[in-house]
Amino acid sequence: MPSSSAGHRQSPLRVVLDAGPAVHQRAGLARYTERLASALWQNYRHVVDLNLFYNSHSRRQLPAAIASVPAHTLRLHQHAWRLGALACQLLRAPVVERRLPANGVYHATEHLLPWMARPAVMTVHDLIFERFPQHHTLANRAFLRVAMPLFVRRADAIIAVSQHSKGDLLDLYATPSQKVYVVDEGIDEHFRQADEDAIRRARERHSIRRPYLLMVGTLEPRKNHTLAFEALARLKAEGWPHCLVVVGGRGWLFETVQRQVEALDLTGDIIFAGAVPDADLPALYSGADCFLMPSLYEGFGIPVLEAMACGAPVVSSKASSLPYVAGDAALFIEPLTAQALAAAVRQVLSNPDLAAAMRANGGRQSSHFCWKRAARETVDVYRAAVARGS
Image 1 (tube, rainbow, N blue to C red):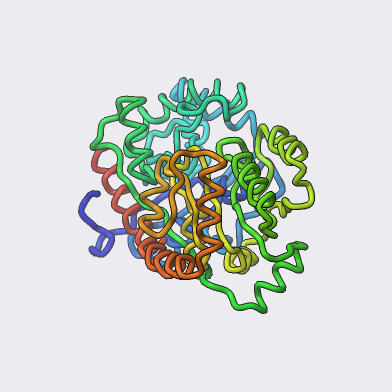
Image 2 (cartoon, rainbow, N blue to C red):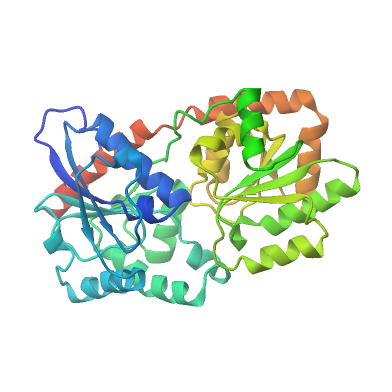
């Protein structure tokens, strides 16, 4: 990281941050964008003149946490916005630039960077479409394979949300190392262990019975829900009474996930809770006997932090950034098979002392990550981008 400048007395640096993910999405990108913008607004207004920008193709509004931040909008169809961002980058046309406050830094919080005459920062969450192309639709893969190398090359500075994502940037795109800054994501303060009354109310709202295992994340193949279903089938055959609660909206290629539930005869034992309100998540994490993260690839892995902060023992794959995020607080599956996953979950369920130790270790591990620090380090990246662009 560059040396911290957030505490020095300087005139505020204007930053235009793309809030689109916080407006239109729900999962990791939305959480990142909303919490980072909120932390910048709440803690660093003395060094950052924050403005938001988003394409208002839907009727959704800014989340309450950042609704008071000055905002500017563009109104294009979603596909026109994505293709337009690429086109104006190729043509070096200031179409978006004209709609923004002058000067400062532009921060692309997702993988979409229009051409800017000002310094530009882009957050790269992952390069899943490169590492696991089969887990993206053909159209999205084709767009990203053309656009991402260009966006990465044109950005003055890049924020990678993990060391693993930085490694992918260096490996796949030969990105100069000095241009990429690793800034860990954080965890919201309201993610802490809930009491039994809160757990009961959340369960009743979402028709969840106990005991249960839990997964949180968009339903798409790389999250490896099918492996969790196969592990659950093994546990059910042994007599374990648990159901599996799956929290998250439907992503692309979901149909194969649904077919697997039916093929394993688990329709009554898997509860698709959908995208539940954030306010209910701490209680759902807290009530789980075990949290499962058998993902094939994660840019960071916020649900692991949330689960640990709420006292849920975590069983995780060793993929990408997850060992760094979970530290020594999780049980890791190796090899990544249904048999190994079932064995790890069985170990947690049958050993109360182990589960208690994992809860304690998880609380300590999750406390190392906070959005205020992420915002402070992001301010440093903004200033590095200005220095590089001058």
